[in-house]
Amino acid sequence: LRDIANSSAYVGLMDAKEKLGVEVIYVEPADIAEMEEHQRAYADLGLDLVIVIGFIHQSALVEVSADYPHINFAIVDDVVDSPNVTSLVFEEHEGSFLVGVLAGLMSETNKVGFVGGMEVPLIRKFETGFAEGAKYANPDVEVLVNYAGSFGDPGRGRELAVSQNERGADIVYHAAGGTGSGVIDAAVANGFYAIGVDSDQDYMAPGTVLTSMVKRVDLAVYEVIKSVVDGTLEGGVRSFGIEDGGVGTSEFTHTKDMIPQSVLDAIEDAKAKIISGEIVVSNPLQ
Image 1 (cartoon, rainbow, N blue to C red):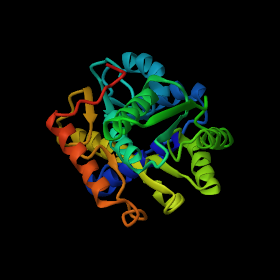
Image 2 (cartoon, rainbow, N blue to C red; image 1 turned 135 degrees about the horizontal axis):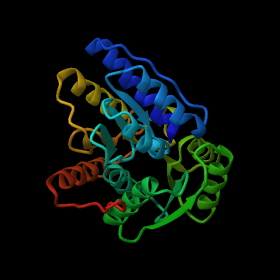
Image 3 (tube, one colour; image 1 turned 120 degrees about the vertical axis):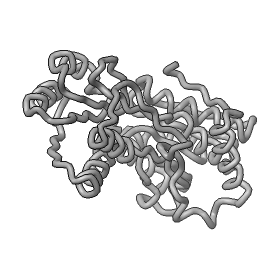
């Protein structure tokens, strides 16, 4: 999911630059070995805030934040328990529940699929929420699950999605980063539906991608920068969910006319019940 998250984070960074007048610099590490080096280099510059994107930064940031106690850091998608680190996490299980409701109601075979990237706790949140949403909306639905072992292998994503479709899944949701483009390609080639993730991926195959579970990394990045500007940064964990627009569905730009109003209403009903606490979606990280 790193490339999608990085792109979204960049949008938030540029938004902050424009609206808040902050100076920004950024770098995209080529591999994990560079992450600590970049973190230390930015900390040495004495910046007001250093933001890292993705759980793969977590172990390096534990060390670096301890070595630079007077520098503020933020991490997206993981938690570092240091007083100078703000951990920006998302209720992906809640957003995934909503697209699960859609899949459960739209499936004609009573089988839907989930393709994950790496089998890590974060991606389990997507899988769990999706399965719970699908079964909430359609108790008869079966959820097929496979992991690709990579966020950057579209060929493997395509292969797994085709396999799930051959076993009856007529809608496949991916939380697999670049691997997920193969899931969408497979849906186009084989005539089933896909559900995108993180950013609005509906444009990648209009009419084939039913919706995307949008995760507003840009919002989180903007908000943490704004808190530095406002002088309200406190560290700790800050979570973004359905209620504050941190996660949710895309706008159904290409599929609104294909999806029955009753299904759209069911998604809105589930959203309201999650916000009110009537529906509690399981979080495998808790």
